[in-house]
Image (cartoon, rainbow, N blue to C red; front, side, top):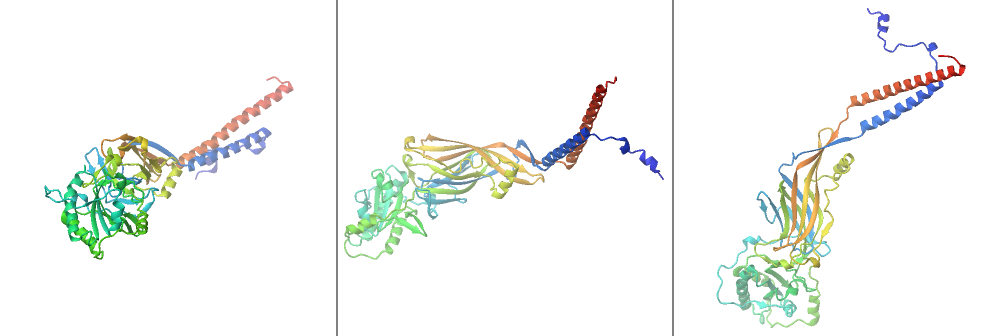
Length: 485
């Protein structure tokens, strides 16, 4: 067995008998200072160990969401009708998706950007609209010409008035004209306006009566595409559906048979009148004229689209395969309620991330709440463009759990004169690089090592200072006694 004497021989910390040591006031002071220093430095080291540390690096984008990027948006257009509003996507690889509807919703809004009712649903796809194949050489004047001077009189005089708002230069208006006049002539023969008086088919030339098509106070028809066919019931084209007020329009085929069938269905709900037509009394007419038309004409477009991660465009414009547009009358002013990229991050998760990296998310809503208005001094045919540079930021916690993927962007906006139909264009430029922020896990062994270094270092430095101070005092005492040394 190993004796206790041999064990004691490896003692690194040999003890000096207390009787051989001497305490001093200076040593006590240094000991107190050393102890306080140890406690202060230990607290700082512990705080550093418990705090969150991150490292930032820029790497090639290795997104887990693949080659596509989701764009969520909510944008209000005060002067663009939901009837023609279209969301299009294109990119440098040749992708060209027009009038996306599956993931996009539209709501009619008033001049204050408030929704006027339920979701807007357009009629049948315009590319399926049928027209008459043959056009007679002989001109048929079947429809009644309505102008600003006689419009109010006739739309209040007939229980049903179907009006074709057109422009002579419009190709689709030219295609509709023969079948419209044929249908009007047929309905006139079947329901003589002077003997029956239940229906009238008329037409309005919007190049001659522009105010009637767009700006007259009580009949704000908001005609934006030609031709537009509106149905007036006793003087008003207001359609009310569960609180939703909008213009009653016809979206069906434009051949003679379809127009006549639609008119017949409308007449069927009106009792026949045997007497001749007479103007309504002034009080009744005035009452109908003052009936407010829907203050629509604008559209809020919300939803999302998925685009490839290459340079491309998100375009919102007026589009139709069976209408023409007057570019000088188009106004693409808009208010961006929301625009974001990537997956939705819940507020709770974003709050946790901001504790880690306060600046994350500070620029992912750069355009939110901003308005872009085409004022009169800018003139007509104005396209509004937004150039967006998008960079992905990925945050990884200490357990290698991907906490959030956030797309942030810079935005530069401008207005420009356009030779074509004005649009609102968002040009997307995605960076091939991404910012990777990783939470650094601090080693406990490193913490212990630093604590030992603090204790040992302070103890050693205090010992050296005590030795210097003690020897200095001893030498000074010898000098005072006059001893040689």
